[in-house]
Length: 130
Image 1 (cartoon, rainbow, N blue to C red):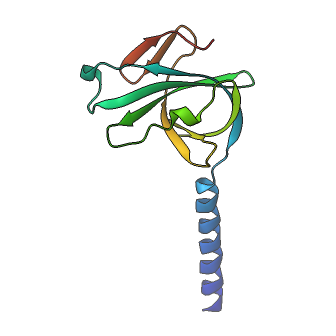
Image 2: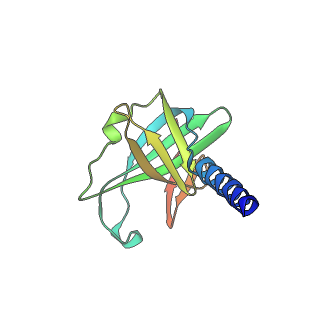
């Protein structure tokens, strides 16, 4: 009985440590190159947004572009992000989270491609970082 209890306890501890390791977020520091205001036509989105911004972040040779959309019920926090500054960010799945100076996070959808053409979902933008 004691052996079964100790095996069960060991399994529980291993399970908890695995869950904790997955939930642990790893923030990295990147350079915010640009915050670009964009307009997405209503036919491309299911919900209307009061603001859409492309965020360009570079860390070493890696470059990320993400679309930050603000619904009519949300608050636009893009003004807290200053281009040409270092920011703390993390990537989780298809989302990029950027820490603002007031220690909150902005959630943006990662886009594909960097350079002259950026594709975010079913919307394609021309342009790129400076």
